[in-house]
Amino acid sequence: MSILENLLSGDPQKVWEASFDVKNLRDEEELRSIADHIQAIKKATKNIDKDSGTDLITNNSPLSFALLKLKFVKDSAGCQCELYPSNPFFNPNKEAEEGLIIISDKVEDAKNWTADYRCACTKCGNKFKVKKVEYHGPLYVWTNLSPPKKKPPETLIKKTINYVRKRL
Image: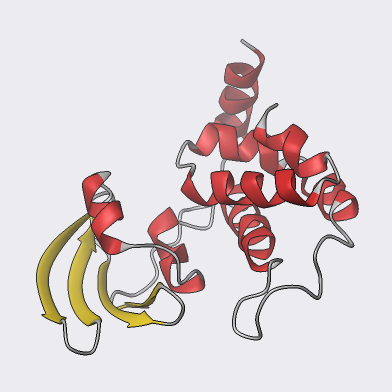
């Protein structure tokens, strides 16, 4: 099943998995095609796992972030790295392995299971400070040190080109 099909399935496990797929997906065209169905996704997931999970992170958190990311991409709001502060599950080491950021400094405190990072986005150059904390597993608190870089609104020509590309 596709990510969109899983999000629309009504099955909590499939929705949860698809939400993480959206979190990790970087292909803007594919994200936009899923984002075209935001209202249907919201309707299909209206009652999914609302009250489960912990006080800190509910099982609905991945879905909430997926919807946030889809709206962000649909609105062409900027570089996807600007979403790092919205999700504590972005591991800077994994992001660096994927080539999405460069870690310029890392200080680990093994005794307290923490780490501090300085890094930069390889796409737009945004700089971040990241604090690793432990709470039933690692969480990462991202702080964007750069001013937001908004994309200009999509022109009619760009919209038309994107529309034609999707149909080919």
